[in-house]
Amino acid sequence: MSLGDRLAASPLVAAARRALAGEERAWVVGGAVRDAALGREVADLDLAVADPATAARAIATELGEHAFELSAEFGTWRVVARERGWQVDATALRGDGIEADLAGRDFTIGAVAAPLAGGEAIDPFGGLADLERRLLRAVGEGSFAADPLRLLRAPRLAAELGLEIDPGTISLARAAASRAADPAGERQLTELRLLLGGPEPLRGLALLDELELTAVVMPELETLHGVQQGPNHHLDVHGHTLAVLEHTLEVEDDLDRFAGERAAEVAELLAEPLADEMTRRTALRFGALLHDIGKPATRAERDGFVGFRGHDLVGAEIVGEICSRLRASRRLTQHLQALTLHHLRLGFLIPEAPLSPRRVHEYLRATEPASADVTLLTVADRLSARGAGPLASPGMVEAHLALARQMIAAALDWRRDGPPKPLLRGDELAAELGLEEGPELGKLLSELEAAQYAGEVSDRAGAVNHARQIRSSPYG
Image (tube, rainbow, N blue to C red; front, side, top):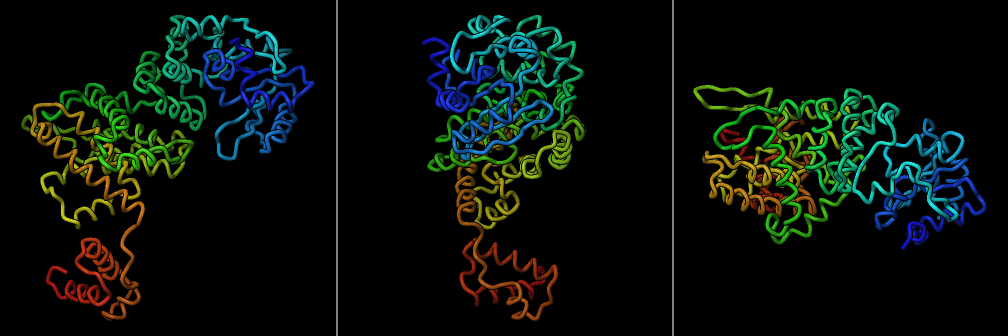
């Protein structure tokens, strides 16, 4: 099947043709042409047109959707499906024609245009041949200077599509690497999201390093190099971090092993949208990358023992700074901070297994709403500690995995059902005990919830009696 036939088979292309019938200056460009050439489904459509607003509105009418201006700077309008299954971007033609437009694009594989109405593709820079050679090559020497975001796009595309980066392009990228943090934070976050959420995030990160971009965009990761750890670890903090990401991918791929009979529910959880166009799965990968980010600042060595006391707290603060720089939403920031803050918690509970219901309740209350997510992270973290210390022993690893499966089940139940429904309201408890509203009442209500979760109280009278006993106890 020819490139034109593959494009014609796309429902989006067919709809755009109907909407823009008779429009000669309309071209399918960029990722849509690339995907068609690779035999992939054209799920999103990029068009270069003379009048993007008019084109987008016409396509929206044809598809029964809504068009809106995406970027005044780049002259782009977008049409998005309500269920976000596809999108169409219409961008103003740059220069005096399609050839000039293609000359201003980033990589040769995206500098190919096919007439929307049908006909031969225009490929002035050999992009189709580069696709066959599995090569990512910049269109020109000024590609990265024109838009520094392309520096991050290069490793992301190479990893996603299984391409090698052209040596000349590597040299150009390294020469321009200092500008990688110039684009707005949310644009950087988008590329990092696509890289980490793609099929080969480890290769994408390796290419970030190869192009000398990590130190510019994520300098906190650079500080992990050479930070040696204690006997439970066989790698420095940077190597361990990459190992945790690798094991996170392993956990994703084998949920039957790591989540047991609740594997299908965990898969659904990870597929859920979280924030900033990121699923919980991609956020978990971000969490793996950032969970030990506080270790360099907290490393201490005494009598030959290496420790990182407080690296969870410090790390959560650093994650907040990173998210602020990348202009992440509050929800994503809090989620990633929770993964960092609580990634040690389950490991501390291993010696107490099997856990009492109260300890389970304490864990769920502390880690919600990321309880299941952070538990999965602790599994990847434990699998990555392969040193000679006691915490890395096979017995400790298996104990951790067993407890994690139990806690994942409890977290899913809590997420579905919520905490126990209170047996009486705060004002009712205050009236029964003759209490004023304040910290003591709040503590009693929290204690009653824990007791109810543990099955120690089951009715109103029992709850009131339990609260009275707590107040009369010298430890109450």
